[in-house]
Image (cartoon, rainbow, N blue to C red; front, side):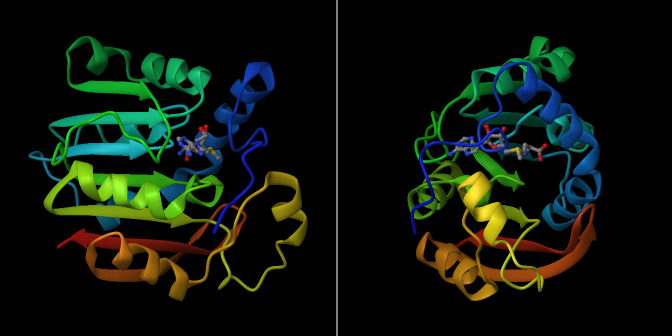
Length: 208
Ligand SMILES: C[S@@+](CC[C@H](N)C(=O)[O-])C[C@H]1O[C@@H](n2cnc3c(N)ncnc32)[C@H](O)[C@@H]1O
């Protein structure tokens, strides 16, 4: 289950084009952010980790609902943008953004009560290792919600996108298996509508 390591602009936004792309994502992913936030059922006690946080827009939207939050992205430019977007909370010590890969998260185990990934999972070259890492940094009963705008259940032909972006297209069955193997129980999948995604897949698991 390996995607390509040489990331496309969407998989690792860099430079002027990368920053422009990230700005577009902020608007294009609005409904996806909402679907993931709803599934997470956030509360004021939560410490949220957003993996592949990009511009930091999802963290900014959730900031009023959670106690603390963190973001991680493997693109230094996205880390910079996410810090800027969440400047006030970063200065208050309520949000931290780090540069790292999803397969090696720089936090000790049990650091978070909730985790998310919007529009990013399909790029991860090591999905099993990344899910196990997220499971490790979540506390017991912590929730993970991942959204997949493009997936094997949406009736679309993704072969051009797979070639262009080096992504992997997952089925519902594959996602449930990956979550369970990584240590998540009560894995649930539902679908929502989002921009350019007729059947956004939203996968939720709880650390057992
Ligand atoms: C399409 S963008 C989505 C950004 C953001 N989640 C959003 O919805 O606006 C994908 C993001 O995932 C990040 N990413 C991809 N693979 C990653 C990995 N293995 N580890 C950390 N970040 C990753 C990219 O750098 C990029 O910022």
